Image 1 (cartoon, rainbow, N blue to C red):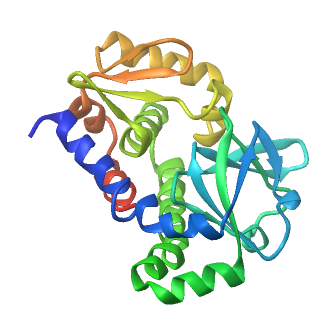
Image 2 (cartoon, rainbow, N blue to C red):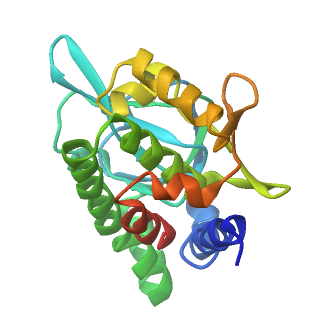
Length: 236
């Protein structure tokens, strides 16, 4: 199995049974909501469930009045219940506009009661998202700068990477500053490490927001937590 095939099969699994296909029946009762680059979580209203239908969305929180940071990323199929968010003053951020399905709690419960697989996909998804958050904390506390960048590229490669010959093409879901916030680094460090990965032939830049992962095995070898990242993100 080639390095691309292993990443591609994981991505296909995420986008199939445990992804939006299982949730498709909810479209009939959902309102489609398109968000721009920034949206306050308080504006979403209470009593609703939001499911990411398209795009990658960052959850940004204020750990300090003068410091905001991206603490989590939501991918298609992920569930957001605004009133259950623990941190105050949350904002949703996206490099490009994102689409959510918006449902009332009642509508979601009624549809989930009809389909055990749908129930599992919706109500167990927040647990998977919590596990990913715990892994992200471990990444921040235990890895050095280069390992964190590798971890981020592995995460988005599994989640949103697309075949490009024998490589994996990924559109960066965050700006350089957003990536720095997400990884608790500064923007100059992000640029320096990405340039180093380019020099090593592991990745190639294709425009401002496009990355081509040319050597998946070499990239995963740079991150001690690569297997755990692939396991959690590859499970949906």
